[in-house]
Image 1 (tube, rainbow, N blue to C red):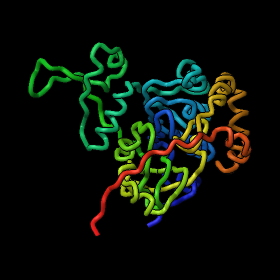
Image 2 (image 1 turned 90 degrees about the horizontal axis):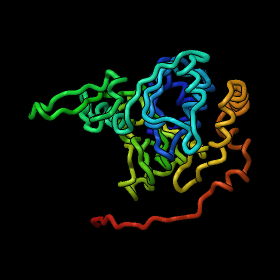
Image 3 (image 1 turned 45 degrees about the horizontal axis):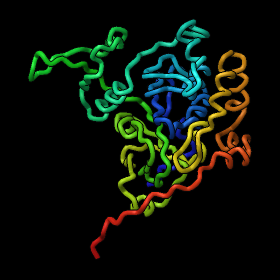
Image 4 (image 1 turned 180 degrees about the vertical axis):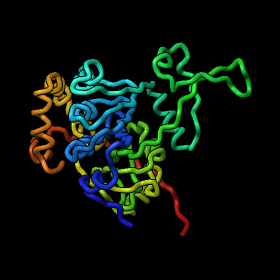
Length: 305
């Protein structure tokens, strides 16, 4: 059964006001196009979850879609602050933003607990950390096998919606990723509803030729969206490079509410979809981000006659 949908339909049908939404992807495969569509459809009162929230969450929080953020380290990578997020946290401007902070591994462990239907997940790396002092959900406990061996535990995280980007998938949702994996697999299994966004939808035979790259099985996927360049200004390994200039420019744009609102009016609200966003940048921009080929070797899986 085909699960292919447009981004507009996937967000309309699967993302609801008040949901906990996780847009995951580590360094690359960060689906900005999905975040823009959530803004465009004016979703409200979302709890946004993400390991290392960066510019896409600054845009979404600046647009007013969220009332809470569950996160680990956050910032404009390689540049500095997320100005819209800081205004909400530090000055309640234009409204307060509730935050719940973990370490990187703490967020991964929350997804792993959620994906495994566990009541908590033990983690050692909060030893001598200050984070438990500001987050009462990080709880110390003794090992049931050795009372002198103390660890911390974190609760499961089961987002209402996970949005993950992959390089390719078939129409049934079997999604393949290469390069940095992040925690796309864990969040997909933890979430109640899953949108997979891809650079291209391919035939099932392509997926079957290289099954070990299938990180997310179609059984847990609700919608498949084909959206080339959906990660911009992030990147998709093998398809386009990171747009470093955009991240530098965002620091200026987000510094003042007026320039942020003007950017949203032009690049999100003023466009019908991501295809118009791509067209607005122009072919020369995308040509400048295309990487040189770096092919991986093939393997022989073997097959009985």
